[in-house]
Amino acid sequence: MVRKLFSVPLCAFALLLLMGASAAPQQSDALLAEEESAVLSEAALETESQVSSETMESVGAAQIGQAVAVGSGTSVEEITAEEQQNVVVGDQSLLIDGAAAPTNLGKFQKNGVTYVALAPMAQALEPSVEIGWDGSTVNIYSDRLALTAKVGQLYLVANGRYLYLPEGVQMVNNMVTVPLSVVVEAFDAKLTWDSATGVICITRGSGGIQSGDSYYNQEDLFWLSRLITAESGNQPLEGQMAVGNVVMNRVASPVYPNTVLGVIAQKNQFSTYKSGALANRTPNQSSIIAAKLVLDGGEVSETDGALYFDSSASSWASRNREFAAVLGGHKFYY
Image 1 (cartoon, rainbow, N blue to C red):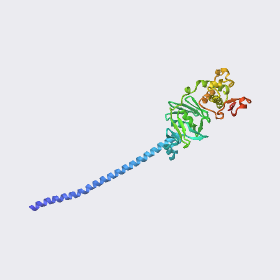
Image 2 (cartoon, rainbow, N blue to C red):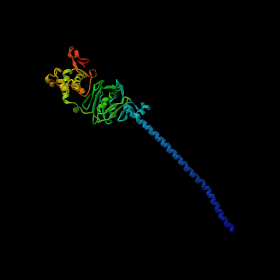
Image 3 (tube, rainbow, N blue to C red):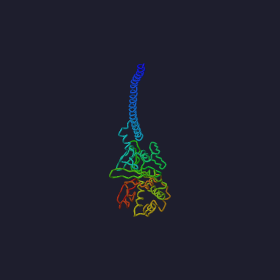
Image 4 (spheres, one colour):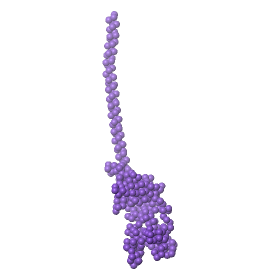
């Protein structure tokens, strides 16, 4: 009886051992499955991160390419990796408020003058500008500036100011191009050049040049435009400007009166003045433009510094002064 009772617990113990042995492999399998799942999840996250990074790089490159295309008129497919990099780096030889300028400005130098494409340069200085093009004239507007530039003209107009362009408004590589210094002036910015490094630095200003209404001295404009009409109203614009330059050169000289009217009214100098009769003349439009160009500092290089002009072969100036050039119907002398 005792032997039977002892055998029952022993059988029960053996049964428990068998059940434990069968459970252990199942638990190990579960642990192994969890470890494998963790490894696969980590690999999936790494792959997803890599794909996401590659996708972002691809999107970034595409956006850069589109930016270049919009600025230069080139299709995205034509944009090279080097050009995309240039957009990021910028033009290190031209700084705007310390930052490299965009590379789509069409910048080049000719005879010591730096030229840029007007529209993209305007956008670089003021991104909010509105730009129009009618096939011959660029119109640029912002809340501080109204600018027009017509291809072939010897000036551009900014807020009613006439800024002289000796080479005129040009079309270069299908872009309307003007001297950089004139664009900077129109936007009331400042330009400096480091001769050691060749770097041009632009500092933004108010965003728009002072208006012509407040800039031009109205008395000076009144007399100068009438003298130009009387002396050279039928001549090319630069011939008219040269006559105005003579007047302004005299104003700047200590030998002559220091006002426009004083110079024009000086005895035995300008016969067209005729004791004030000049005031009754009506100046033509080109003479008014020439006067504004001169009053804004425009000077024809051929007659730079000239103090005399005449149309006579045997004038006092021709016998006593150094010859400078012929413009329009006049000879000019220093």
